Length: 465
Image (cartoon, one colour):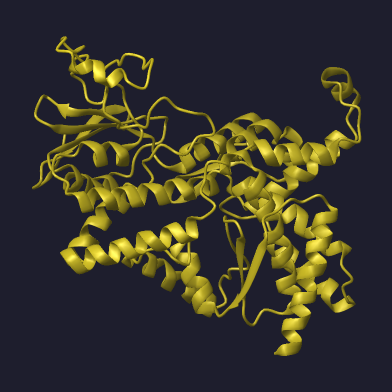
């Protein structure tokens, strides 16, 4: 065992040095060797210190069962933090861990430098530990079952938030409107309010709540629900903060995994591998980048796009030279620029070319009757179709339209329909959870079979009109 640790430490040092030579800029790395149970628990929870909930346990048993039957395996688990934590699976061969180590160094570089991760907290490991302690305290005070039921409701709409933005905003969604205030000219201005003169009256609040549709359903309910107690508002704030931390990872899945795959291949080729290790690495890399049959493999598609970008900027065509002024030899600089600026949507829209769509054999398909059939292979429509499915990380775009619907304090939501219908059984199961959070009837407007439909829940039953 001691020899294995020494070999692993030596491999980490060699990979670290090679990654630096390639220009990767990552957080300080912390590696831990863990048994499968621990790795899959972290994978199910998303973080080692996160609060407990039965849905995480369900994910754990599903993932662990697939591992036990050799149907799937978590090769790498890395956390966006400073320092950056990476977990290696006990029982892996040294060459497997070498690939994982090279892969996570590139992930850490992406976390540190991609602009969409800039607003995220790098101390979320500690923050989530505080959150977990708070929820345990609430369970002790109000009862485990009571807290679990409320968490069920909060997690049912956890994706309906306003994601962290790299641009400053005037106010958080759900914040109450405030009247105008006089600019403060001196430190003693507040004393002049004592002179008996009438104070400036605040602007009367707009009747509509919210003044404009808001996507941040969690924040709106947290700030405006008349039924919530303080501890419940705190749990909503916890769920929202943690989802805002995970959001950049969800919107950069293809580009992030593509970047890590691109670099682990190049780092491994520079290492002094034995003949057996070289063969095993080739086998592992091929399994990681194997094209998916029914879905996009982000490792494969992402790395192929990066390779294509580097090639086109290194050796531009005559048309590219004349049209864009490319000089050639700029491929490496360009992929670092792309790594910094893009998310999955912009990555595919800007760099998925006709040639790549044909090479990767990408197409759109749907189920017709009992069979899956190809419905589109025009490269621009395929690209736009893929981008459309990634909008809002693939979740339905639903806004709070009115928090005082028909002047009865009811909640009116609207689905921003774009040719993709909601799952009606799922919708009908979720509305009672939103009712629990809001405390009054809830309505959701959407489009079914080309016609506008409104689903409602009044605390007793679902209805549709």
